[in-house]
Length: 217
Image (cartoon, one colour):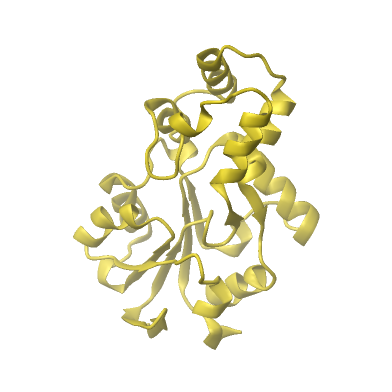
């Protein structure tokens, strides 16, 4: 158990740390995907997708309630265009930039000091990309070796900011909310977590994971 000072704020008595993936561990830019789809003919993509407001199609896909094929077809039918799966996936994955230097080693160190968890709103197309990227770049098959447990929304049929997803992580791992820190770049994901007593750290655009945890370098 440890007191943490992150981003100028104190988080006392932390034993467990829950990390978001995109925007915390991986650098992302949603505008890149919007631009990529616009370039291949989906001109209104920015109207149906954004970080803070998603249509039910995206929610359902994030929760794994529809398949990648169903997701692609629904989105393309709404735009009245046809694309191959490879072209679609390349545009959909365009938002992913990279994992900054030091993040992987830092996560390994933090796992030795805390109970660490990954909690991500994501989907199967993105997971395939993530796993391929970390395998090629860092020589690991996926993210499971970096945390005590990983949670992907598309594989547990629930997503942030719903209360049930935080309850699941706490209950399954026997965590005390007051001893748990949740780090996310999207502030709307904190409301229900904070109601449960989880301490929350908002990752700002100017922050990096290694600067927040500089004491663990």
